[in-house]
Length: 141
View (cartoon, rainbow, N blue to C red):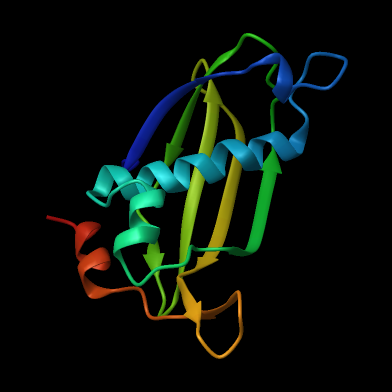
């Protein structure tokens, strides 16, 4: 399967532990950014505009798993790939991969839930079916 999103990320010092290798939680930051970019590449506006113009309050992560194969280090230019989401009702799952020079370093699966504001609770969120128009953006041609 070809990735829906591919991008190159330079590993920065802030991603790394004192030994100069990536601190594992920083991979989740990289993958989380890829999830947002995935939706932008599909045709949705930036998240700030989505929040202002759509019935949308975000898509918090509810499950994540990762496998680590090869470490990456400060200064590495890595390839980050994300597949099109697999949609449930209100949830979706995104598979991510990070590689260096063709070697798979990390794979990650995120499960997120599409949410809207819950007007019965100040500041609350509730799950909402992912809109059909959003799903259609990822449909195979």
